[in-house]
Length: 315
Image (cartoon, rainbow, N blue to C red; front, side, top):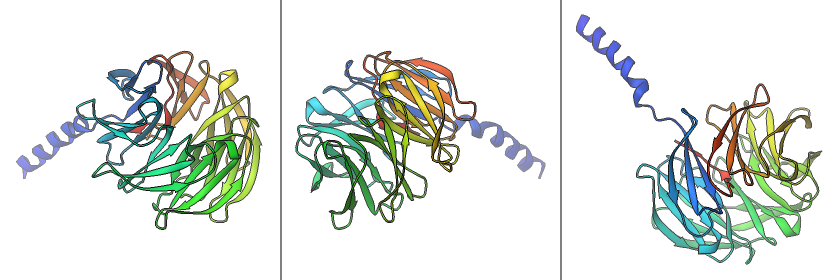
């Protein structure tokens, strides 16, 4: 018994060392690279070459792959996160920008900015298995937690489409603000938050009915959004004034404004649900925000043209 107790004690001491820190994968569009940030140390652990002006980011649910859209290479790159290198290039279409992966890990969805479609790629074979016609210049994408619904921001149509992933057909399209771009779903998939670049606001949609619940004014050129603190706070990057707006999701109003770097674009939340990472295009770095204190607690140098458009955190 003493030996078992001793063994258990030793294993308990060792176990934490085997838990990998979460990593943020930041696309540096002007550098043709992806920076890998160790969120435990706050340092860039690797810089991975990715040709084709990398922009969008999606991480497989198991954390083993990062999918990086490459508009100039007409598709996306597949990064093996253990090897920390690009292991495949998939040609999809000329305007590949927005990208996401289904929560079950079976499908990758890629928005085609020019052809007004969303391509469906099977993750096992890395082959296109379908295409869905949507509105003009589709950009941000999100899949519901139950894998049933795909939401698409149609930038030049000023609308958002809800797609049934089983039938591969548009179920409903609703008007939002001007030039919608980044999308965020809450944890249960009940609410969708849409950043409208040209109207300087965020549209809040009830996903079951696709009814607009609120339109919330923010600052200049809101680009993308992320939720934190159990979905109670929404963070919105404002490109043209180097700030992040903070929205109370119960009151549905802006409650704070946080200065970050110049031209903030992509934004994503650490798995601890408290730290929010912001990719700053002009500064080539990432600002780390404490969602409780509403202040920047770290700035991490990445690369030129840091964009990080999508959910860029992985295991």
